[in-house]
Image (cartoon, rainbow, N blue to C red; front, side, top):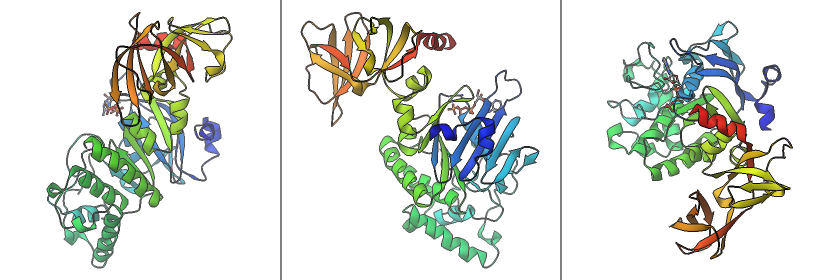
Length: 405
Ligand SMILES: Nc1ncnc2c1ncn2[C@@H]1O[C@H](COP(=O)(O)OP(=O)(O)OP(=O)(O)O)[C@@H](O)[C@H]1O
């Protein structure tokens, strides 16, 4: 399924029916920058699905979101929201007419308006859903007029009542109906972000864009709220794209994950595909907290750093007969430990994680490894290791990785 969504330009052009957003070869550069910030971005997002965009700092995540929202104009390519071309092919639809809701990492609520008025703001006939009120960085759409002149009298008679009812409806959805008359400073960070979500949802947008929506919250609230956000978006069948630098958040919130690197999508797939079958060493390193071991072919298998013999059957990808050296990815949960006083690996530390232990291991040659297992083994004892599953990457890619850092 992932392949049919992340298609070539010609194939993508024929597949617009059940998709809410389609990008065809979208590129974008900024003056004075040698490299493109977005380079031939291409994907289709099915209606009602959630896409998580992850990647290292500066890879172009926010620029991609801003380009979809309409705050940046692509240099090349086409963006289609629903069945409308909103950018490219001679078309340009401004942000406020794209039917897109926005949620920011700093909540961006109006401090002088109560919760109800904040949510109703998103319903103003001329408003861009969820537009931030002040000049904070990120997705701020500069040059949109009139956004700070907010007061109840802007509502035409009759529409105000409808807006109020809709605002209460979305506040119920996010579980904050009873907070309608509070001001933002009287709410917790998590509650403020739920108000921001309610404001973005109020006009019933076809697509919501969330820029690092949870990064200003502490870890417990983040865990709780990511479940909440997913539930609310699914319940309202709203498609959404959210940018995050937190891999775990992307994997557990999304239906699809796009891993970006230097302005390109390096891999698109379901969270399971991205985690279990990373296409490149970069994706593997960025998404998993796996172990990486240099290895070379030996007999019918592979020898990894004098620590492990890997029979070919534990390798995930088919073997390239030309490949004689490579780098092996072994996820922490796939590394098995066997107590052995003659083993070359020592347990350096053990952390209790509740259901299982995380072991920090060190080989006699100084190679550090990590393993997750339910077994209890003493710190300082020696072990041998084996693997259940491994993924082999051609070594030339690993070399490029190091060279490009
Ligand atoms: N308006 C602009 N003018 C010039 N360069 C820009 C502009 N906006 C972004 N850039 C550059 O484009 C690149 C991508 O920036 P972007 O904010 O999209 O990255 P990001 O992946 O969201 O990073 P982070 O995770 O740190 O927020 C960076 O090198 C940034 O400096």
